[in-house]
Every structure is written in structure tokens, then in C-alpha cells.
Length: 338
Image (cartoon, rainbow, N blue to C red; front, side):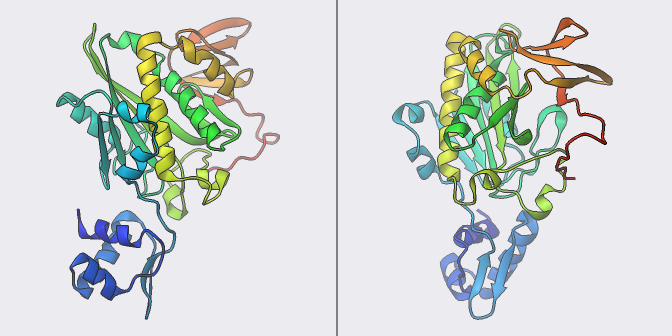
């Protein structure tokens, strides 16, 4: 582990640590500690305060990911579905890591988390803002005997199950936007990215990635181009444990992927309907350069979207859905960053 990452683990409690104590703990000179502080600040975007006579501290404490705490927060059944756990301080993307691992033979149930992603990805090639220690970046690898045609509703099943976990953690008014966004009061809290590597008739290797905003600050939000929210705003700074929440989300995800292999999307349809926040709303769905407007009327048994357009029901397998806002002079104000 690089020196600046080791240093951050000592500073994660948000308390002052003297340069002398840090040098002794890390086996470095005082000059090397100063360089590590500067590197952590520049590379990881962390605000580190230096005060004469007291030392160094993070201006905001971090709950860093810990394998023992994470696995300890799972039930025995949940732990049994995790075949391998990887926690990275710094990685390009947890999804990319598991796609590589899967091609190299990693087993079903491999779970990967990271403190920071340098190339985090959302749907349609969008970048996912991934600051160090601030959110949850979690991916799960699963294998199915069938082909990719059997996996069309998997992201919906996963989204519904994760929404239930967040509701249980105190996130009232959690909702879903087809096909895979987690919303709170119509602001984006998280999203899913499902990637498949498969033969036409199977087997299939699936990686389901979750990005969840827990704590975003300052210049971290400059590149976000839509209304967003984080758990700290919803639950307060001490309203959740990052490790415990990651454990519960991962456990629900493994249970869902296992159940989907046996039963498909059907058992999850009522759960999706419960959290569908755009049902009955006038929406727009973008398909490349084409825009279709209509009333959303839920999803089909296959997970496709139903839209009432000019009195006719139309079915969509893909597309970017957004609420159709009223005229700008009468539309409610929304917070937008970026």
C-alpha cells in the first residue's frame, strides 16, 4: 500500500495526530510524512488540516471499508454466498475489475468494493463521480448457465431489492426510475450498471455494479449533471454505517441474483411496482435523437417499459426516461449541479 494511503488510515478518525507519532507508526521521517499529507490531499482530494503543536487531521472523519466489519454485519447465509471479497483503496472501476477477474475464472459470488474509482462508469458511458471514501462503489460477479436473453429483467430485480434495503435503513420515500436508478424525492441517490459477457446460448457471466452516494462535498459535485442527493443529507452524518450498509446491500444482491436464477423476474414485480416513482406520470423517453412523450404505466412481466402514447400502449426495451416538466415559468425549481 502506498504511503499516502497508509497515512489516511491513521487520519480517518478525524482526530489530530502529531507528525512525530505518524512518523513512528509508519516508519518514516517527518519530511516524508509531510510529503504523504500533500500527496493524499492532491491525489485523493481530501482536506487535511495542519496545526502547529497538534499535528494533522482530516477535517471530516472517514469510515473506511473493512473486510472483517463488512462480513461480520452479514447473516451466516449471506456470508456463505460470498465466495471471494476484494476491497481496493484505488481502482479504475469495480465493474471493470470483476469483468477481468471473471474472464480469468473468478467464481460466482465474487464481491468487489473500492474506496475510490478513477474511471467509474454509469449507464451509456457516463462517468460516475467517485471520490475517495465518500460513497459506496460495489460490484458483484455472478454466473448463470443460460444465455444473455434470460437476463433482461435482472437489473430491475436488483434495483427493487436494494431499494427495500435502503428503506429498511431509514431512507423513507426511496424510489426507482426505470431501468436502474435509485431516487429520493426524485433526486438521484444511486444507480446500477449491469454488464454481461456470454455465449449466445450460455453460459453467462454477469457483473452488477452499484454506485451509491453517501457523502459528497465541495468540488466533488461539480461534474454531476443532474439533481442528486446523498445519504448524509437524508439520514444525517451519523445515521448510517458505511460498512454495515455495504454488507446489507451486498447480502440482498447475492440473494436476489441467486433467486433470479431459479425464478426470474416474476417474484420481484410487486416490489418494483411498490417503488416505481414515475408510474402515472407524464414522461419523456429518449432513444438516440428521437424523443417520445407519454404516460408511464409500469413495466411488463419481461421488465420492459409501458408508455401510453396518444391512447396507445407502446413497449420500450431501452431508453433514457425523464419527467416531462411543465413550462419553465411554471415548473418547480430543482437543484442542479455541474
